[in-house]
Length: 212
Image (cartoon, rainbow, N blue to C red):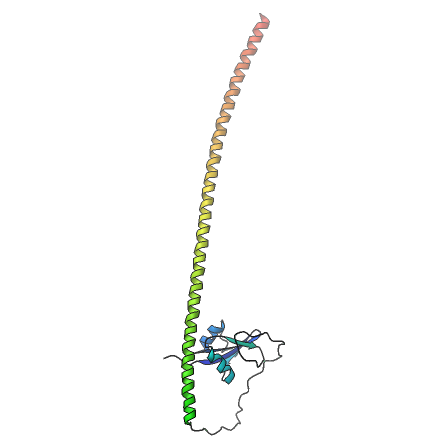
């Protein structure tokens, strides 16, 4: 059985936030709160008719208004013109206030109760639908992010492979040049040795010609 929706409010930054949710945990998730705002006294359930009506019309959707104002809650709210020194608190009945005698429910009251139950049931269904939609969108975003990550990793792997191949080709070219240089040095040494022998032979011939 689906849990009945309740309206919760809090203040974050420049806005008062309100949402219709089945639990405090669901409200925190809708607000994106990382901490338990309810335990810390920064969030609470409200029975303000206007706020309840606005949130029940858009279950699961975070509505907001300028912090400290009495503006109606809506999805797009303007920033406050000025920040109050202290956020106004809701009035609570004093202990000394006398309890009013309970009235017996009339047929009209029963009709209203049935209408409210039907409205809450519809709001709960819409809330669950909105939650599923958000979950599907989140899963789609995560899949796209995963695909992009895999694509980036594949590009990096290809680039690293290309770099390794280029490094190997570079080393092979250096090795070939080194082999050519060694061969040239041997040719130089051989030519130098041949020249020394030829030079000595020619000098000996000149010396013999002078002494003849």
